Length: 581
Image 1 (spheres, one colour):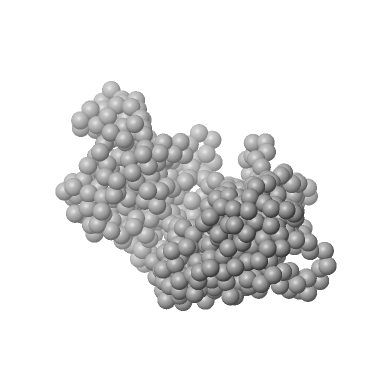
Image 2: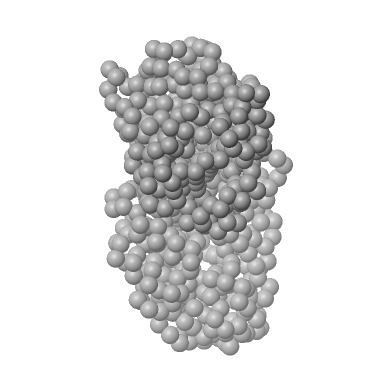
């Protein structure tokens, strides 16, 4: 038996709060619903809780890793387990099996969750991937009856789990490339399987065959293969003034051939050269605001104080100019269905939801649609007439327009419905149906406030979709926050001599330096917000859109990412790359 309380551990110049360090204990230990006395977890988002109260690993796997890794220093608790056991191999123990040890009763709920911290503990960064590929993950137990357990006691099996699916098979269904749908359906019939794994398997079953994306690890990340690789020249054919600060650009393909259809809500990444050819280019992403089925694309750009790209577009870009553009991308897209829809935006955030409004008017006019928009006044209200025409085609359409500072010529009841900001309090009073799908776009604080109000109304998180302008929030599980993060910047030290690496959302391009082990490490050195968990190509948390270029992998990931994406935790640039970070 092994226990350990969370502690702060120094790792790569950061501090990690973790309970992965366990030490053997002797004598009877009380096992409770959430933990063994004296034990704890540092990151309850990925570890611990009722369904993961006790971690089990096998002595046979210890012997396996001693041989594979050439190690003779592996002591009990080395893999972060509470129970080190003789027997109970992952390819025989089944989800739902029940055991009595001492006076406590346990049920097998799920395999181990892949995590970089077992690599920390083992001083072997590949360990999360090795546990999966060698089919030796270990497993978690739920405590059905609390009691006392002592090292050396017999483990007595008291019930077989239904469906007889082993820990190793269930683990492979989520992490390995071969995922038979009938076996996933079988796993979902096991009541003991933890809710998190059930949700992952449901997402896999709902995913279309051949989608090329692991929806079980990233349910919201599926998107169609990009219509083209890299950047292609698009020509500006029309420029419209939408408000005092917003202009729209209509873009056409070569020879005015129709462009591939974009999903309503997707965005376009363009390359700008404000200082002329040969000078460093600017890469910016703008939501598509036009009709989704049009043969040309429309992007709408706001002039911001100090905004280099927006100001250059407003002041210098002209009809006939060419903008190199990546294919439409993004997962903030309108879901098909027949239920109510809430489209809530502020300012230029109207752009992607306007494309959704077009789609609803063209294909689903019978749906109940709530159009909620906030602007300063009529001069700063983009697409007012355009949205009104579309809403007139929706018999069940409803509108609330909020002006925070109406102008002298703005008419309440005609130009806007409410004076003041579009707030969570106002949203809470609208009587929005809890069965709606909601799409929010605008400043971060606006989206957080409205999302909180929608959650309070009963909308589940899975039905509240947001689009973030600029860099998204990072995820570094277990890392103790330090000083406020600096804006993205070139890494310290002399610049590298390798291919150019562009982080689009961060507005940064730097040369690659092979001293970094991966694109993830380079991004971290630049304070570019990134998301990761395993750091070795298993969990797909770091999967990032690759807008241009190619990468090589070291080590190879357990499964290749979907087309147009890269796993930055284990990849390096093979040539200039453009990443959606």
